[in-house]
Length: 526
Image (cartoon, rainbow, N blue to C red; front, side, top):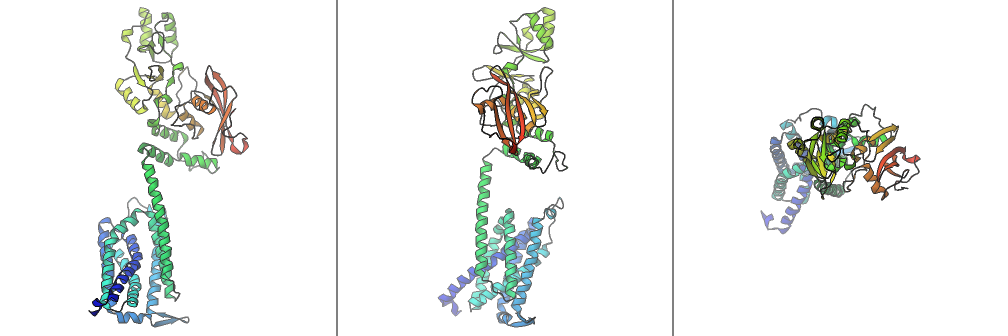
């Protein structure tokens, strides 16, 4: 025990512990990958048994140190090259690491092996422990030889090995958990194992590879992977700030292939008749309508004030009767002189019966109108429709002025597309290949679905119709034949104002042209 009074022995012990830990890092990484193949309840046990066997193996090798030294003496000669026992062990170990690392890498890169069945298949406990033991044998030779070369006292070597293995057992569980949580780290670790296996193979053939080169490459790779993990973490934090509903909607739409299909079609790699085109336009549009419904304002689906049919009690009964007979709607607002002076909500057939029988509308039979503010969400509006059993709701602004009416069928149209009444024409009419005639009051969400583009709807703006979008682009009321354009993918969409309806944009012609054949710049308008 004279070595305990020797300061150099203690310095050698500390250095050897550090080296043993460094040399055991690759061993730990491979053990972390191997135990992941076991059921969760057996992983800790396999990890402890594997590292304990590594400790016993290294202590056993240290006890036969005289035999270990002789492993460096020539043992066999093949084709003029002399191999020692150590060389043979390193070659076998290197081949084992290359084979096992390649097998593991293929298993993680090939999706067919990962999803071959619905339930995961786990490896046998003792098969994994045996592989850990073989791995320990390979790395123990290198670690023990390093200890023999650095320290002369056997107790110092044994103490260093016990401390190093003890620290590795403590660190193995969090390291395993970290590796398994990050698939890219597993791939990186397998790359390390392939590199180490190749270096052991070279060492066995007498080509010395300085350990500093290997550890420098590993440290550099770990540093880059660290930056990558930080970037992913920051990205996840940024995503977490967005509403869960919005993230879910984007994920589902991405699964349905909305954006990817549009890009592939623009590149000429896919058509609507392609067998890989799993989801049709109608399916994607309906799912998109459902997922974006909560984000939309009621103003995006209302019938605007100037298109609302209503009954004025100040008019002559004959005129009211003729209007009711020609009106296709079942329920109408009943007012006095102005739409803002609402008395109630009347059923067309009841009011017509009152006019025929009594010559006037019985206001006592009118229903209480459902009045909502323009800021209400569509999901909340649906709840009000269920509670009030109302057939339509009047939408007002902050000053109490009626801006329009909304019905359950308007909500349904926001999901499934237009269902024009008998007295209405569709807001969007296809007039040819890549050509449409669109009403200025057309909903932008529906128009995006028909044109299969994005970029018309801006949640930060207050407009929800094509007319609002064009007024924002032009900055003033445009005149007939004024144009503006929007680039999307490989096409340019040209919007041409065809006619005005008083002080509003009436009809707009939309033409899709290949981007390279369209001389107009995106921001140009006239």
